[in-house]
Length: 285
Image 1 (cartoon, rainbow, N blue to C red):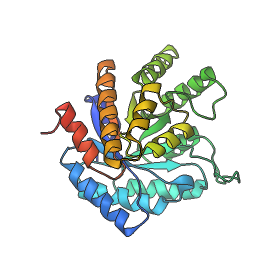
Image 2 (cartoon, rainbow, N blue to C red):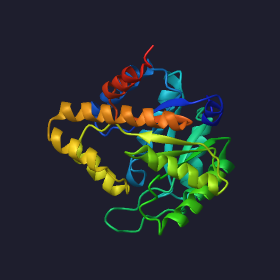
Image 3 (tube, helix red, strand yellow):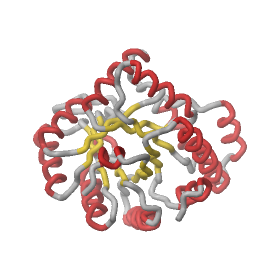
Image 4 (spheres, rainbow, N blue to C red):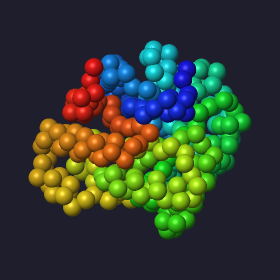
């Protein structure tokens, strides 16, 4: 398969993120979305992991299947939380044996009930080191433009982020609503001597409540103008989806003006919003 680091070296990439479904109906939606969006010829796709690695087997099966069936690679998200070293080595070696050449190494979120997360590792950098030992992977790590929710302060966050990115091949950012947050992060990293490419994550939301909840969880500021637009659409699902497309389209235009290494769109296992964003940008062939 294709290494993401090599794809980034050739120019800006377009990629999509999916999540592992929990029901047969959800799996059908996943398959339809992948099939529909394959026509847009993404450079690659990623598949998330679930809290505490709760969807490990589903993620594994989907990544291997997409790699086999599609013309683009699938990258698994992988977390430290709740896994022993032996479990992670087995998983990484199995991915490598099945032609998976890319992995997103994440610390993972602690259990919501406050209990011990368990596992042998705590930090994503430990998982990066393990992946280097286990196989010849192209390795990505996460970046928070508005600093990680658990960071003590901005300066500490940026030092840790720069050190993590210097061990990886690329970064993928958490979503944000203002391109200036991404611009400032990249500038601050450059000041620390870190030039590892960081792909901005863009979320065309489909739920106002969901977008607000996820923003609060991830320390993502919602601008006043967007709060007002969200209030205006209320509970109308189609008006909300259209607003999500509009906001994502505008954000991508601003990011392209900055000169980003690519765009990573959260598909949320649906094709329509992504297709409309492509149409808005004149990308559909």
